[in-house]
Length: 197
Image (cartoon, rainbow, N blue to C red; front, top):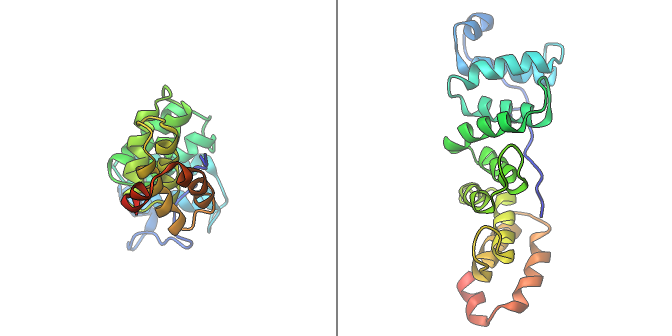
């Protein structure tokens, strides 16, 4: 199963929030400006690359509830960039972002549960988060949810639901979804295939 985690978010050329003095905006607590400054430090855009400084500014923004900063801070903990790797801390920040509807965070949180990283392994909880992400059209989540249904991991085995989610992933461009569909279709009746479509 593809368990690739989404990496840092951010537009290619993020702009600091409209403010006459970007430094003033970040110190005044503007969460978006803090996020953008963190992104610049993480990517060496206009400043020397400095993961520790990125973490500092992501945290300031994340603590204000800025979902993109929460997600990126989780990634920093997940991969040990600018901070020691800490799966439990990554889970904490993925969850905060996921609870606000961030599909990337929902997917990564599902992966953490599926692999038992920072939390006890829990396939049912993984399915919950894969579903939330998949329902937003996140292709990798659709694929993983389909595989979970096909294998009966965290949910009762259900080829109709497996087919549904794998087909959506295939339409979304997942190259592996078609291969898994070829495995489960022979296990299905014509009626089940029709129901899945």
